[in-house]
Length: 347
Image (cartoon, rainbow, N blue to C red; front, side, top):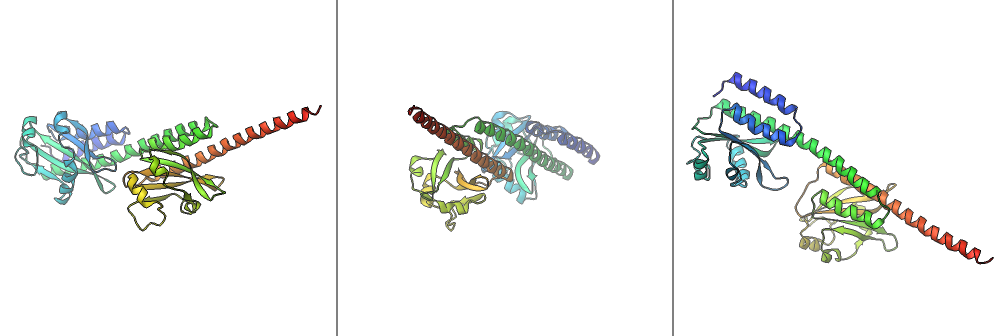
């Protein structure tokens, strides 16, 4: 056990270390190692929410076997809700028999006696749990609980900071990569393939489609797609009126039956589409088409992701324009050569 002064000094040292660390793996290891060392415990583990899903998965641990850590990660979600309801922590003196815990035999085999679990909070939301395990039975005091909770809160902020930095870095690399690919070719088919396939894979979505404006038919003509079935792609024409809903980035929830902007609602449900993001493809402030991003689950795109996708759609529009101008120049060149040849035939 440590007194208040010892905990305070330890917390200051750990906080300083977290402020200087930007790599996610280093942050996660620092959290679990600091918890176990500062509280003289056998082990510590950290579970974090799996993106937009419902699972809380193990991301870091010290002092535990892999078999124990990966026993039942799905339980962490329910455990976090219970902890928040019960005052912000779960303290169990005898983890091998207490009805609030599971896998008693596994805990006994692992050499675990007592457990203290607190939520990891970031931006007022529970993003995971931090657990402390002791080899000897322990009555956790108020000071122990407050220290581990403060460490979890500090860890939550450090995790968000590391995620933000990693996201910025990944976005910059992605923008550079796709921009280079778009600028490396004047083949319009290759450009359209990049706009559909690379964006779909980079953002881990169900599929994408690129539709360009057909001025004569007043329709948005499908020119490229990725991850969508032929039956869905052949569902029918998309009216140019859809452009009016895409003057700015728009998000559509397929389960919202009252959204009149959603065309072919039944077909989208059969395709397994839950969310659609519309992104206008523009050239000199004129909309020439739509890049659509399809998700198989309800998804909220961050501001960073929306900004990046919008930039890629605009860059795609410029690449399409450049490729079109190149094709036109090639055609003009061929026509000119034919005309010159016909003049020469007069002599």
